[in-house]
Image (cartoon, rainbow, N blue to C red; front, side):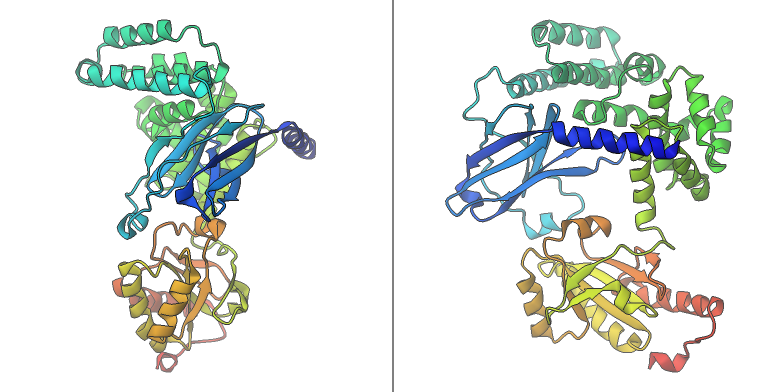
Length: 478
């Protein structure tokens, strides 16, 4: 049965790929000359993972073009330093686009976990105002103006009358636009508004917009509303005295009983699965829930009884949770060093590896890299130190190594997007301790200046106690 389902899913994927149309994006942006620009979309409402659609390098005169494969109307994004460009593309159309003026992030912004690019609607100089983009932008502008003007009655007084008046006005103004993408945008933007006035009793709004409705996993309005209504939903439901069984189901990994429970509340099976997956993902990091139970439930969601929509999302959630979990195999890497030799983690089997990701333009990274030097000298008999530079230009890190005379291994992680995602290294410095079997022992590990050595030595003694025959001796540390 499972083989049959997998065959159907593979056939469906092939069909989608064959039916996907190529949309041409092109333009001229002198400020981006010789730089790479990429476009991506967000495909699910739980992990919000980026799915890259295409990348191109801008020519020296600023000209660029690329083809994007899509089979439905899709909102796309491009990270453009201080800006995040966005637009909606429809199958069968080509677009001339105008990028924002090139404005690089400062060093502080580039390494700050709190920095968020400013949203920027991409210009469409060759498109007339009947294009869907103009309707989307106009509607969102009107909606934002209405909610700002009525902040007090909506969010403080929770006035249903005011919310309904806003919805009526916007429905009438945009009634002539029957595009399905736009209809979904309107519907779930209004759901966000109703959330603001039904906070004390969300059930009617959940039933109206979600419980028995079609699922739109890739639509940004659906994703925003789904997040708003169902973040921390499973935990909150489990705290209700009438719903205590939810905790039992989670801790025992009983996904099917969770689905049955929410079906009894009026949720369609597929939507119940989506809500449960979001709750399981959040529960993994929540005290009071068993990590083993959460993973078991997610594995059950991958089974043949789950829907074709739920199965791949369950697989992604499981992979995300286990990717950097202690005890799991460290993500693979294959990078060149200063001698242009290819280096992999498999070369260090049998040794402890302290793996760091850094950017030589960051003062915090440079301080920690200095601290690694004395650490490496003291522990080199039992610990291999590897530093991965994620600079845009590896030459900057290479020059730092030569100037400082660092002896630990330096690897070129420049433009290694997937590696950065796999090791959650968008913001640096980041550190991991990998054991002799290639599994993660500390994830993330403390930095050299914040207690790594003490944490490592304690872990080393515990490891020696469990693993025979080789016993590291105190003399190994000299």
